Image (tube, rainbow, N blue to C red):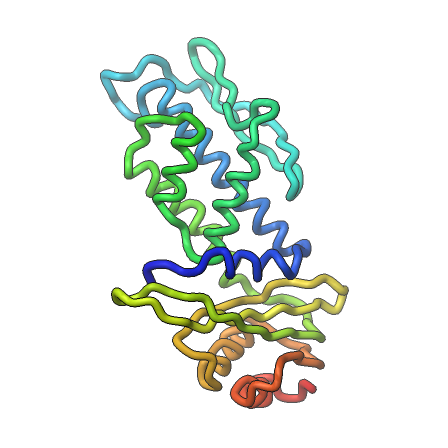
Length: 249
């Protein structure tokens, strides 16, 4: 899939709000991406990656020091590299720098439609970090992608008495043409009251078999305890709920 209507999908995710589980994901994604960008900035500054032998090297690393960073998704601990000569402070942590919003935006988009090397490359360049190799950008993307995939495929623990299903139809460019595709999402409420995005998927049509496969994937990850499933009157969806969530109203 070459591209999607990112605005529509991001707005759908944002519209439902954030609970503790989603914030934990954003926090970890933000920490991983920020740490990777810090390491990339240091490599650019000293002229060499960690453990790399290079004629361009002008300095070397000398361990790390811990520093807390307060963000809109919570306080996280970062590891700031120390240099043998001089000192280093990450430019993204400088006062009045709006880096957090840009970093978080990349994490949110990675959640919806995958990690983009172009997006990460643009982010790094916007922060004044020059000369970053394609392999380094790919490494950053892989680290972030691991966080995203861990969250998307996480086991669903506890019970979810209430479950919402919904769909929207973004335009997708695939195979050289633009077509409307079905983006489906499941939102659950835990027995403790927190709302959580349980999963989502995109397919060629919102038919019963697609919904059934999607709901079964949630069950396979541990979805249980559903008492009430809320949806529109889509016959295929209602049939899939009856087949995969036996006993739910």
